[in-house]
Length: 487
Image (cartoon, rainbow, N blue to C red):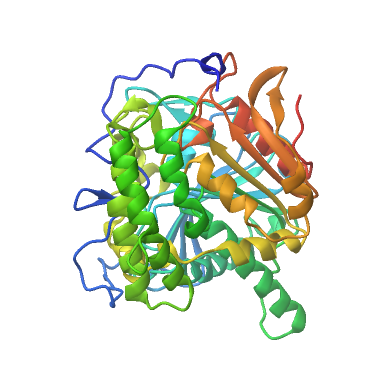
């Protein structure tokens, strides 16, 4: 891929944090590793008591933080799922036409990472500055024409707090459904219940997105059948960026990308050969372990697969480069750290606990169940075939969920659009006449690979396009119920 597709990343001057800082935790030196805790037990951590109101919201309106566009409503606070489980949210009304604009949910991944990452580093109304001390208004905010709701989940993540029992994507979906019922019942937001709903997510969102969307559809069907009561979620759109959805099709992508990618090899041929052996070895190799997990494997079988594959394949193949942006050495200080800024505004937005980028206990809960290695492909296929418009996107400078793996996952889909999609060749994706990437589209399913972008695609720039401009283009087209198209 031509280097002219790139422009150098904005210079930054502040350290991102300890080695491996980012959405995916490091355990015992292994990216996405498994700790030494008992794997058969999902732990519960009861934190300090708060004055909760189960089944209701506690809201701070118009804090003046982040969104400074005159007249644009914002609110933040907690939805108390139970007396000991409180989910933090931050809502921004659309800058244009909020009454009829769709409601878009945003979830970061981890598992266990805060959605404030997306808000402040990627697509929110404001963007963190390079010194991590302040924010600037984002002209390409996703709330320009959509009402956007950032949710810290599962319980315990970011500003959310309470008993940390969630350890699977399905359990997370159940809590998010409950939170949304509480949110949409509140008089401040009840007018949004009839609006179109979109679900956008990244990274471990490759699990969250399909699982949440499929669960929402099943709950809607139960409401329609009269077996449960509740507010139907008018789900129209699912967007997944740089996502882990189907490990069996995606893990060979690490081996491919480490040797050949648009920029430079990441490791030596001998390291790649060793990883390839770890993938192919019969019975005990990574491929065999993932297969066993998805053929009815127990929690311990799936957890052991995560431990082995990330220790022997994912972690060593990145070499000395940044796992989220291979054009930088490890650890790239971009996007800038948001910890100190969130500490400074915590009280103003209603936060009740110290913000953490990633909750280790929640991550360990997921590692214990082996959720990481369980495929979400069937749920994704169901959602696509249900008529929900789906966009999958990826940055070509991201290693940890690289485009080789994501595109292999897409090729393995079995949906009503798959045959048409797989027969197509990529077309240039231009934004305002400037090359931003390449894309395919069939029916209500689209995919785009964005050139020069790392793991958090909206945080990057390409050529003379501004930071976040390409991401805003594909977000806008998808939210307008359009297939991707070059402009």
